[in-house]
Amino acid sequence: KRSNKYRVPLPPGPKKWPLIGNLFDMPTSFEWETYDRWCRELGSDIIHLEVAGTSIVVMNSSEVAEELLDQHSAIHSDRPRLVMVNELMGWNYSFGLMAYGDEWRAQRKLFQQEFHSQAVERFYPLEVRVTHQFLNRLLVDPKNYVRHIRHLAASTILGIAYGIDVVEENDPYVDAAERALESLGLGIAPGAFLVESIPAMKYIPEWFPGAGFKRKAKEWSRYSTLMRELPFAAAKEQIAQGTARPSFTSYSLEKLDEAENVTDHEQRVQSTAATMRNGFDGLSADYIHSRHACQPEAQKRAQKEIDSIVSPGEFPRFSDQERLPFVSAIIKEMIRWKNVTPLGIPHASSSEDVYRGYRIPAGSIMVANIWAMLHDEHVYPEPHSFKPERFIGSDGKIDPSVKDPTSVLFGFGRRICPGRFMAISSIWIAVASMLTVFDITKPIDKDGNVIEPTYEYISSLACVPAPFECVIKPRSAQAEEMIRSMASEHS
Ligand code: HEM
Image (cartoon, rainbow, N blue to C red; front, side):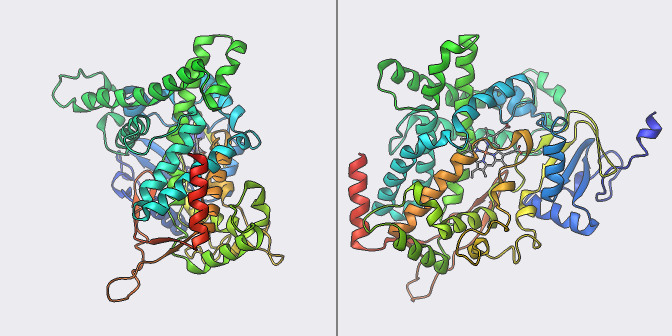
């Protein structure tokens, strides 16, 4: 039986060495580009790697990812084991990192009830309010635009998850989340902790020489607990006092009476709300990070479109989306051109599978190379150029024959990003509003030369744009007045 089984070959891959496999071939930054190169060299959109006994399958096209993660989703919907963050730092409460099973299903259902495509419309007024406040901060202090974008992301998610308003400086909930998410990034970084390869090390006592990782994990687990408990306690208090704004927490706790077990339901609401914060932090902010800023032609075309549709003195509304196709095209191109999550979140296979005549071993880590899918020259000609017009048809509307990048950006199968509708709506309103009132241009040095932006990206788990200089100025005196009056209306 065994010998029959092993006649089914593994997908092709770079040459493996005994015991260590591809350990020394593995890229340590911009992995997606190396995986893409290997796939091209091997002429296959699915490849197999092995790192010290761990099987890794890279899916380099949307066809393979859809077939494996959607159509074979009963097999490939688990997550890889994460000893440091899940078992030692306490992040296993978060359904995004959790193994596939009943608790994952229960939390995911809770999340989806409040975040499906129609339900997210309840959060539109909040998204509009925090966006207008963000524009005012940009007006007052344009140089610190990265900080304001991060503040916008935090205000959006803390408002939606808990109904909490974020304060300008030293917000306790933002600080708690930042500390926790920073430690999550350190704990999850591939190769950072030996315990990931030798899980039995997790039983070493803290005082033991070489057990520094245990002491770190203990300290970091305090941050993850604080991030989960602090805002939830505040939301519950506001609900009890009758001062709470509507939020995921308030909507979900209203259903407490229907729950079979009240304590379990409350715990689940707490964990799911905290998971929203991890999902959102950074990602949407990184997209809004003025990627389109230094694309003057696209900016001017979008502004012309906005000026022709939106009445003078007003901001775009969600209901204008269809009538502003070029703004939507800019957003599609922003998320395609330099996507922040080039490898998504890996899935894991709970049992063996056979696909296209290849064997996929049980326990394989399934990596979707989203970057490669969004830079496939057959789907998006000149994939490395910023060309929002690629999404516009001859009738001036969004061309449905061009693949929408959101169909791969948010992952696949049962684990597909459940926050995708909210993510896109909050990015849309922020970008459309910024374009309405601001001109974003490249800075000029003291000799009158244009300073080109760096377009550098920091490669970690996510691919984050490095800060670059740009000049953000109101388009007119009327635009400035609009920002100020909206901000005072919301304050
Ligand atoms: C532009 C912004 C975003 C991008 C690019 C993004 C992308 C992704 C990707 C690629 C995955 C992995 C899917 C898979 O395993 O196949 C994911 C999962 C997830 N995302 Fe997002 N996401 C974004 C915003 C959000 C927001 C706003 C939330 C919450 C409000 C969120 C919550 C989650 C959760 C909870 C998961 C884990 C789902 C699970 O394991 O079942 N994301 N996201």
